[in-house]
Length: 85
Image (cartoon, rainbow, N blue to C red; front, side, top):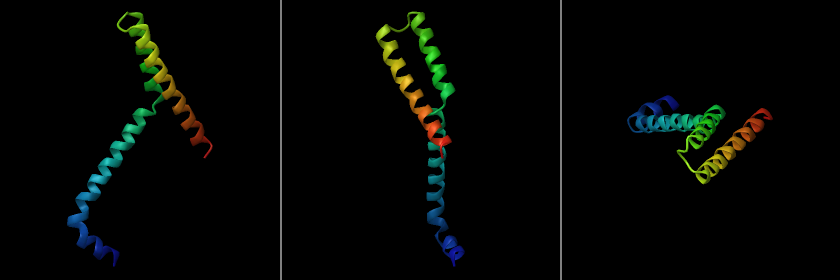
């Protein structure tokens, strides 16, 4: 019976399921990029280089560094939580 219902609702539910699948994949990719420790470390190194070259002020450097370090802290907390599961 489930197959028959799936077949009958395919014209309506097919596109909806496709959009949901795409949204899930986009969310997964965004999460990977947001919680990539290597990427955040790279951003920290780039930030330090920009500060050393005089491209940004000390205030801008400190604010951006604080935000990146907070992201690193969240990443590490998520890693610890994932390893405890």
